[in-house]
Picture 1 (cartoon, rainbow, N blue to C red):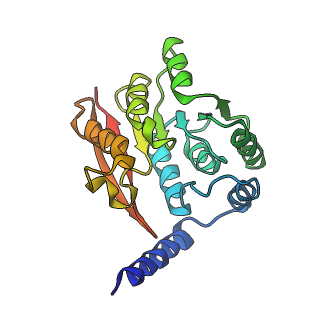
Picture 2: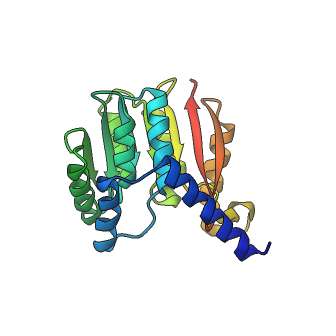
Length: 223
């Protein structure tokens, strides 16, 4: 089977999994549709990835969650739905236009009371949270600008506790992380190397296969 045939097979497998395990309701379909109509980039997590986020949030028993990178709110809907009863999500977004779309989508999903969309540079927002001494988060999901991943990892650890679940999307970048000369993935390689070596976490990267090879990092804070 050639490369094109392999990619087509991977798409069919992903669609099969999504159809069985991640059927989309009106709120999720509308979130994707409205994000596209608003001109947001088509870079949100897949349906199956969204379901995975929701399951991980539920398995962890998280009540306080933090998302770095909101986009149109599709992943935020999944995360919020997976939280324990009364749980809340704070999601950070750089672009006001994206945040407006996300707020509409969250309201449509009935989650506006449980999810806060905060606009601004994520590094600034994360530093402000740490300076304010907020209660540690039970779950953190990183899915923002890739150059910021090493900084977001350190900031997330400062806002975590033993048992916190750390997740990060796009950690294999179509396999380009294998090329040490690829400057576009330098920050992701640094993130992966830090995550693997940091004694404060137990971690793994789970490969995700569709049109391109990518991965989601899953880590548990241990100290």
